[in-house]
Length: 201
Image: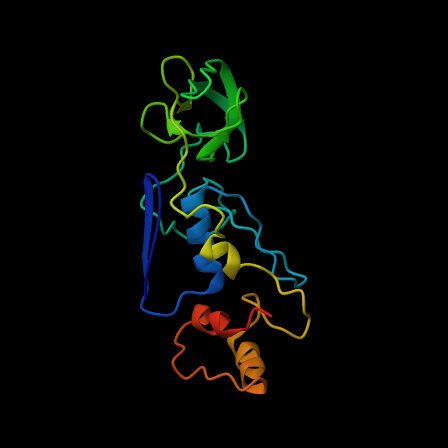
């Protein structure tokens, strides 16, 4: 299986010889978008995504990062407030502003339009000579059409109906529901295919 997710200046490609789990797809999506959403399956166990390159290791752990890069210890943590140089093309706002590290857009304090947060030096987590981590001088353009939901957001939405499965349920549970409602899933190969067959209403 090959998964490719793109978002502005970041592309993540994952190749696997097996079907990717829901959690692995979620992690890939989170890495590309820079969002810090929490994966909650509704079970007692709580799953949160901590990037394997975050520099945090468990004592005695021999696991190696699946990524080719390691997060330097001097790099700010995701969500930590850092300096950004704002030069809004719409209203001219040009003051030093603090934004959360790891985000790729931020609303202009002057006019409210979303501005793209570009790395100040072109390298993630590196400060420029003036101490800025980001430069915000152009409008953020989403690749998704206006007023449309992100496909991954839809996939990760919880069902309000306790009888109706969603992406957090197992494939056998989803199959059981589809069988009960006479929905053919013979062409489905991956979990996302089964989830897509669950009726919206």
